[in-house]
Length: 270
Image 1 (tube, rainbow, N blue to C red):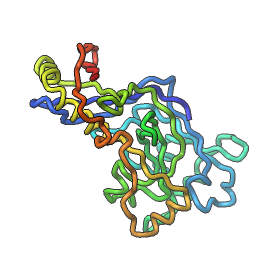
Image 2 (cartoon, rainbow, N blue to C red):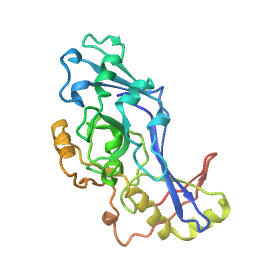
Image 3 (cartoon, one colour):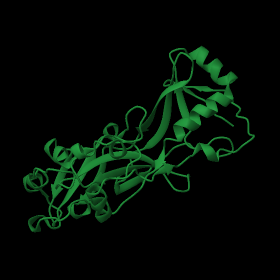
Image 4 (cartoon, one colour):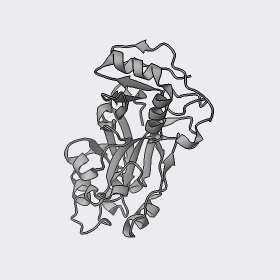
């Protein structure tokens, strides 16, 4: 996978200057995000005539950026990705070929979530050591219409990893806060800035609530995912990469002089 650029978190402040919404923003890079994935990595069994075939993503960075108040994009059928040209097909000789054979296979009608097919999404995830944030291409081996339960379509879902890219992001050092340093946006800039400056504890709490949403998600193999989907699915066992309960105690946040930029105000907590 190619490197997309950097990541930052942003929060909108409501009239009470509380963080009413957040968004994880991806930017930079030198073109679309590319990823080549063998069919055998997400389909089982692969028809003999498609042995050695793969698909390639060429995803604009904005299509990989999660929506408001989320760390993931929605699940999308590989069938849809093939039809709209988001992915292309390569044969065993690494030559780009027509998509019809693969499309016909994954478009087979199914009656339940164990049908032939696969769904993909992008996710901003944390690492086990809380020192890295990544953009990850995730997959589950079923059609997206069967991923409609909260613990399958939500942020904290099981998944198969199709590849991940480390993101350049400014992180707190863990002394007072953990996770990414945010940008704040408000339509009442002076009032919001006064509130942020006068209420560092409340600001810190808001920051940690947002960063608590960045997860280390539960990763499965293809065989494990197929078994998981055949059963009455349990909740995923993901956990926060920057949990609030590990915030150091008896430390008071102090906001230094903010840096005004064209896009918002950067506040450094120390």
